[in-house]
Each structure stands twice: as C-alpha cells, then as structure tokens.
Image (cartoon, rainbow, N blue to C red):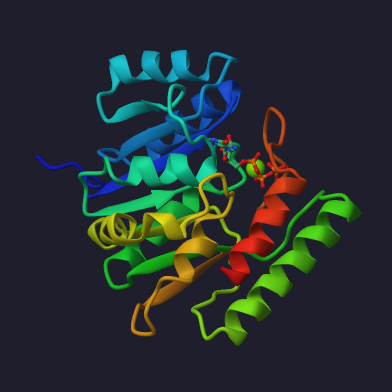
Length: 234
Ligand SMILES: Nc1nc2c(ncn2[C@@H]2O[C@H](COP(=O)(O)OP(=O)(O)OP(=O)(O)O)[C@@H](O)[C@H]2O)c(=O)[nH]1
Ligand SMILES: [Mg+2]
C-alpha cells in the first residue's frame, strides 16, 4: 500500500546540526509516514553526517547528500543539488533547527496540490536581539521594494527558508538558470522569485512559532546579508 505522504520529499540543508537533525527527522518521519527526506550537508564536523547515515540504515527514505568534496559550498548550492536528486512530485525545503514548525508541513502539502509554490511566512520572530531584528527587517523591506520596482514576483517573507514547490517545475528552472542563483547565497527563495512568471501561483502559509534555534549555533553572518542585497539587484 502506498504510504500517505509518498509524493513528498523534504530537503534539509545542514551544517553542524547534530542534535537538531535527530530531533527533526524523527518528528517528520513519525508525522508524515512515507515521506522522503534528503539531508544536504556541507561537511559538518560534529557528527551530523554520521547520525543521518545511521538513521538511513533503519529508514531507507532518508538519505544524506554529502557535499564535503564539492567545490561550491553554501546553503543555496546545497539545496539546488538536493532538488536535482528528488524523485517525488513535490518537495519542501526547511531548516534543521526546528525554527520551521513540522506541523505546518501538512498545510504546505495540501496547498502544493493546487499551487506552484507555497511559502512559509513568519508572523512573529521571538527572541531575536534588536540588532538582528533591525538588520533582518530592513533588508527584507529593502529587497521587497527593489523586487517590486523591478516588476518581479514577491511574497510576504522573501527570505523564508521554508517553502514547497512542484519538483519538475523547480528542476527545470535550475537546469535552465542555475547561474541566476548566487552560489554561496543564503536565500534560495529570493533568487527563485526573480525567475518566476506572473502566472505562477503562489500561496502563503503563516506561522507564529518562529522560535530561537533549538540547539547549536547560527550560521547567518554579515556576508549573507550583503548577498541578499546583491541578489535583489541581479
Ligand atoms: N548545507 C548547508 N547548510 C547550511 C549552511 N549554512 C547554514 N546551513 C543550514 O541552513 C539552515 C539555516 O541556517 P541557520 O544558521 O539556522 O540560519 P538562520 O535560521 O537564518 O539563523 P538563526 O535564526 O540564528 O538560526 C540550517 O539548517 C543550517 O544548518 C551551509 O553553508 N551549507
Ligand atoms: Mg535557523
């Protein structure tokens, strides 16, 4: 019998997420039986890769994409490489650190059947310091404005790392326009939005529980913010 969620793959980019990855994969596999998971790792040194390999021995639907030896590292590149491996009809990208609520995945799955792109939109961000909040919000508004002026598609969280999309649609975009994605960049969605036609159907899924990361350290840095500004103009 086909399992309920076998049309979906969840891509999780990771860099040193040992504790988080065990928690999130066990939750997702329990909540969505039959779902496939690809963990796209850029050479973690804290045991993340070994943990995923262990889990995959027990559950063949979870796979590790080990990108340690790749020339281009980075969040975007690791997501794009994983997308090209996906065999299911739909895919969802989410972070490892539990900031994207696993229970919202079901809503995304539902909407993916009638929309081309579904974006998780944060409506409250708890516990960010004033610096992070100000910088993130200013850059988000700025990028949104630039994209709008340029006549590009936008949504209410253009820097979201939580989105779902029809697999063949995304694979086609990557094959034709890979260079339009900033290699090292942090925000795949922003680069993707710039490539979408007006007729692409976008749905937003709102969530209020964007908490601080569960375990481990943030990898966000000033270079990522500069990439976002560059990407808005590119
Ligand atoms: N493969 C890969 N994954 C990365 C890289 N940098 C970050 N990640 C992963 O991408 C996701 C988002 O990174 P975070 O550090 O949580 O960034 P953030 O959510 O903006 O920052 P915080 O709010 O502080 O957590 C996490 O699952 C990271 O492990 C990278 O260079 N390569
Ligand atoms: Mg995070």
